[in-house]
Length: 240
Image (tube, rainbow, N blue to C red; front, top):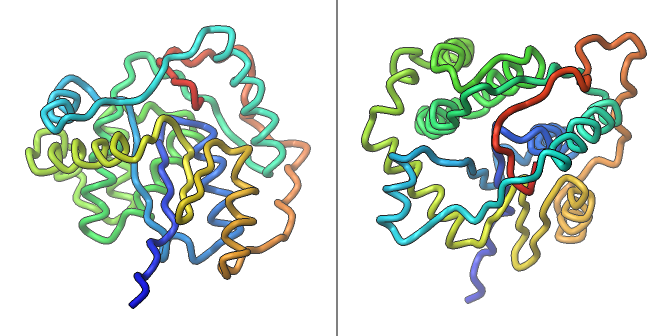
């Protein structure tokens, strides 16, 4: 008997603007993706999660980028946001700590509210420029999503959630995931927002319904677009 093929897989990160834009476009082009694909978080772990990951025999396959490349990404993100009809405020991450948001996503997933939480977090980070390294910001997003903000705030101290986070990152290590957005459809792999269209084409060939409607044009009066005046100080990796 033939095996049932695995659903398409998507690795994402709240940190990456390219992940945010790609996830937005994927949802627009394949509205059923959130219910039928596997979505997995990927982030730079803190010492606690990194130790748990190492104990499992894994590590983060990730390379910090140069300042020159980071400045280029600031400009490129502006172009992409405009291309896909999105307004944004570039967040300035003074003390990046990605556990509060990504571990909370795993907690939200257990409650079946991961997408309500996801939407609330990306709105906070990319539309309003809020600091999602701040547990208070994440707790507010959780409350918006219908989650218990106190439970979300304490997710970083929940050993089972910490272990779930390490397990998620070990899956990324075992799957040779080195950046986001990263897409997998059966044996085919696609890395980066510039490969999203190829991923969508591959899905279409496989029988997944994919919309070809063009993205809405950005309003010429959009405010809070990315400007070079804001410089993100986080240690973004090669994926952006």
